[in-house]
Amino acid sequence: LTGIDAAQANGKSLKVLLPQFDAQIDSLTEASRYGQRQHATRMHARLNEQPYLFDVVVYPLQLRGRGVVIRVDDITERV
Image 1 (tube, helix red, strand yellow):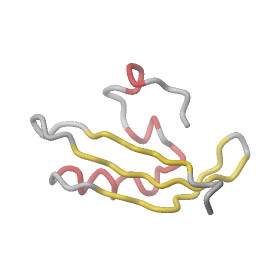
Image 2 (image 1 turned 90 degrees about the horizontal axis):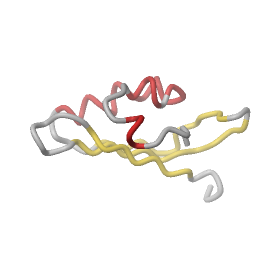
Image 3 (image 1 turned 180 degrees about the vertical axis):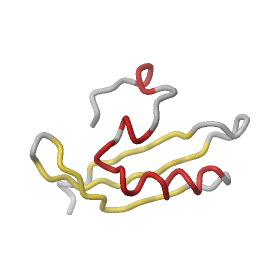
């Protein structure tokens, strides 16, 4: 999706890594601060001038309450 591997992404802001989801990132990360998984479905984004649909799940890390795991599924072909 971003072309950024895990080592490059580690420690970077979601808004830097996924600018196409900027409007939804605040609500996705807010719930994770309280240890709750957050799920957004059918998020629209344009990548390389092409329209896409994504499901995004943010899982908070349990270790010391810092950080999240982000799962982004391209569902464009399924819809």
